[in-house]
Length: 371
Image (cartoon, rainbow, N blue to C red; front, top):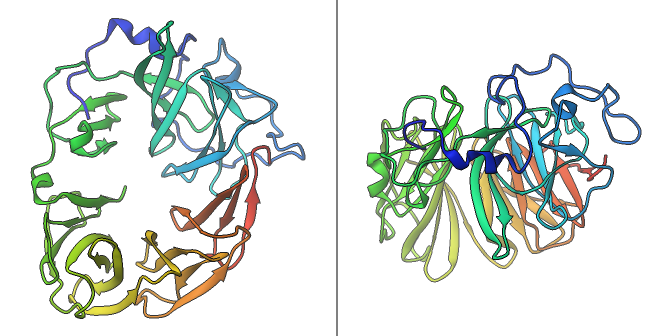
């Protein structure tokens, strides 16, 4: 979220010692009509993409991936970027289509990447390059296209004035961490003013769809949480007076999806997860966070169905979006289970592999560093 687009003389350092590529930005490139089929070796079967070989390239194909997988991040066109811990002062990544088929080979860039958000087609990331004998870090912003091309999105100028958030801006970090957004119309990361509603909460959770659930500071059982479905333009208060006694003295966090709101309560530690109907305010279910349920690893899927990690070899998924009945679903990874959600795909990481479920934990398949 940044201010006026002013070119910075040091921006050439952000190119990671390599040249910029011409062509469309990541967010301007239309999706391919049909993604390439993977070959038996795991690379794409088509000729190398010009974005990757017109030179010198910013991201370089490599034969061997190293390190653990992390992420992933999905763009709105379904492409998914998975990061791989690369060699010293370099990171690797690979981009897959919506069905987890590889679009690119493993790519390496001579810097540290932190991929924050998916765009319409592509991704926006923060770059850190360690430079000089004192290993000072240079930070900047780039976009990554669906075929791996990297372009500079100019970094904010220190002290630059902040602008209001505009329609179409994509928030990157929370306001207290810097108030930044990617602005597609300028192909740049800009500084913006914190939204007016930010003062209502010290704990708030947002979705790329614009859904926000906020727990006001020092909230106790019976207070209201606030929900917005339009990035803070309008709000609805949802009271928690119907929560059962013994749920804990405080409201700790909440999350909203579709017509469901999940509220976590507790004291020093999380104790309960509750589900409300957002429209009527009716309490639909309450679950005690005993040893089996990981109170720090749960989420709502797109229809409001609850999924939670466990200390066993599997996770818990509700049988419907009332979340009254939680069903244990085994996984190929031993506990404790920590998972990521990419749209409604569930992703587990262990020993350099991603284990993916597209049916809410009933079945799993592997996505490796090279397959």
